[in-house]
Length: 503
Image (cartoon, rainbow, N blue to C red; front, side):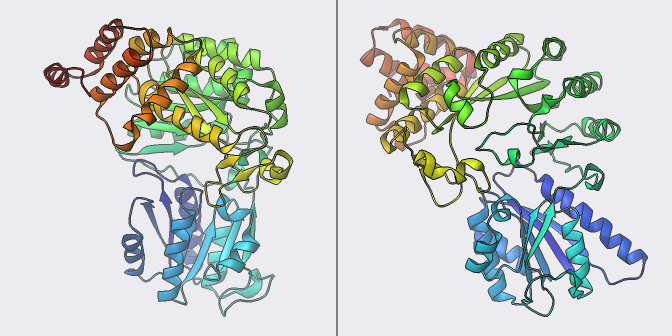
């Protein structure tokens, strides 16, 4: 029996740890069956992207003739995955379609009714459930079935994988090449209860043994990937453990790889900050989910309201200066109207982090906040990623306004290269939010969003805005030109000088 384990990544540079873990677990079971002379299966794995055409993915799978195809489903790939699977089933009625992942775990019954071409849904973690199912399928063993049979090979259409103990997770590092990001985890679960996050559903931390972590990290560092992103939802849940992991990375630093972590600023210790300060520049990168500075909002979504400590510790981490710091805000949370969000934005922007992501609430399947949607008057997109359209605190016009601010914030702040220019023009406004709000209105009014722009054109756009909408005068051009010459290569500067400031 030939089986495909695959998924559709959001970008080519991404790799899928789910595919690595699931295929490794299935391969191990297949080898065990072979050693006992039992009927088994052969596993193949494939990682496509959502940028591949449906026709390309379909043909790649159809050409092989698999008996079963197993896909990991997420908000970024569910629609495309279902379309491809429907066509595969039309072409090969006996092909078994197995889906798993968060996008099918919380409404499996509804999915199976609406999409009859899906044969089986595995809810939860699949490192044990998938090999069990494939073994039973290979042997045409109906003991696995608990519900009404759907064909000669399968009975149970919903299988609960639950939470797998650390010892049940196979060692399966997804060896990303130089063009890809390697994803890695040392623990599953999260100690916090954020109502908008699926990680809060699994409240118990299941940490892999440190001996295993050291072995895998040594192997990762030796392979010299460009970037490693830790999937641990709160990396510093244990100060002692996080210090041990960071120290190990520093001691074995290969000089090229950088490591990305999501941390909780409230529990960030002085000892850990001091340790980070001694690391090679850019060895570490930290993401801090602040989300809001409104205590009532934070309480409503199950986050700590000790925002002063969060801001203070984040400020200390930013001050270390040898590691990029990324901070997050979420628009659309309960009790966060425009004035409240403006305050949150200004307080978080004032930290001076390297990046400020202005995200929008997504009412994900299985989350508490989706179950509470009526409580806060949420209206949201019915298709993945289920982004908020409006609620009792912000109307659709507010959301559009913030979407425009997100656009200019990403291009002019997060992508870097405008430090002097932004400082000069923001000084003409009461707050940073007021600047981005006014600049976004200008940017979209002039239609700049309708086409892509080279980096040097963005200097011209900001200069035009400053001259037409503020009292910055010609001084803004000097600040922006200094930014440009520092950021752009000499040839780009020459092209800019030849064309001048006209956009």
